[in-house]
Length: 156
Image (cartoon, rainbow, N blue to C red; front, top):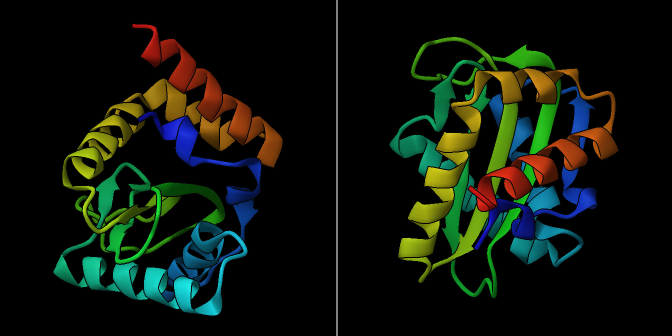
């Protein structure tokens, strides 16, 4: 399973204006639910919040990967958001975040969940790639950059 398989252009947002961690998690839950029921959206939001209570998913260098396991979810989904202004997120380095890749995975996806998190850590460990994401002009350019990263790293 590759990261790009989890994304759809409708779940990639460039320049979101968010004022709090809670509002960010609400936006991510809405995108991850992708038009699903209000119940699904609430369960995703609750899962993301519960995970954040265990410890921040802010990796540092302006990056966060909120994620959660959702009972009854049929397949893993991802959403990517680039904020217009960095947001305090209790990241490991105490710096605010602006690049966020969120995951919602089925409850039983233990190994797949860890593999996806590993791919995200590799992607966001590439500082030149993060700079490309920050420079992308719109949703389409962000989606294209994420797709290109996956293609070049899947072949390696």
